[in-house]
Length: 138
Image (cartoon, rainbow, N blue to C red):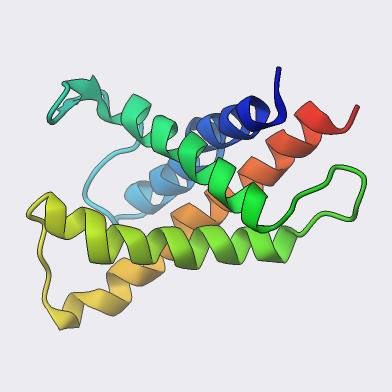
């Protein structure tokens, strides 16, 4: 497989194995009202939400690992992966994705939504690095 395909696979798998379990914990303790591993159809293609999130996790992994100039032979940029996922992905979700889906919010909700997004997306960032290291370290 090419390096880009492995980057995609790392980000794709980081969603069900890192992002969604953190979402499950937040749901379990009553912080978020929706459960993880949602298989409801998403618009416009009717793809299950988990598969859609995993696909975009793969796309963002290519971006993140390219921006970080990731190399399996160098020490891992764990903090950078955590911050990229936590900050960049959360800002894109809040400022682009939510408005496109008609999921507006008032400014009073911003800190809470940012914190929740930071936690689940930071887990994705670290998970992506774990899978990338596993796939490409040889």
